Image (cartoon, rainbow, N blue to C red; front, side):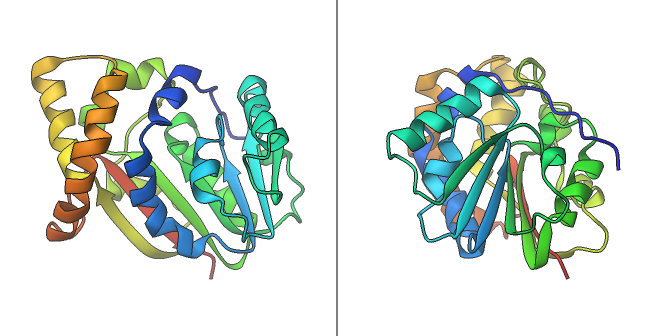
Length: 238
């Protein structure tokens, strides 16, 4: 299997979205029932997702991050006691892990869009799942929303629900495939068509997270998760 190509993240982007606590809580509530046993988080960045999702009940939580500077940030969180003792860090790629290293859950939170060969990466991840284990994936939605900001932070693409399912391992069982953040999508569409702003500000992130995300939690249900600016897929190894 070819080694996946991973671009490094932009630290400012990760710091910016680290403030989106309501958003992390929203998707976290969907993912946490699956975060049991051994968990692998690919593209852990500065540890923001780890902080919000790892509660210490897991037996093992391995953070894989290719950027050494970002990986050091997670090491610092561990040293400061801000992450549970079950957490570990590996500076590198999924391809570095032994083939026999199996997990009950593998996380890709806003990571797959950074990987050129996405189908190969997900096939490799599937091979690291224990029987009954799950792939938990969130990506930005809709290629027509692709912006200079996407390009600047190393995104190869955005996804529709259909296009993400197309690159999932064909033998996996899809438990959920849905859109999240319908209100946020309206804001992103307005920015794309009218404001044409390339980079969000911290003030805008806080406005979206504080006011829009809570409304999306309601409207997403009313729309049966068929409309939103992020795609969530949960797939199980049969």
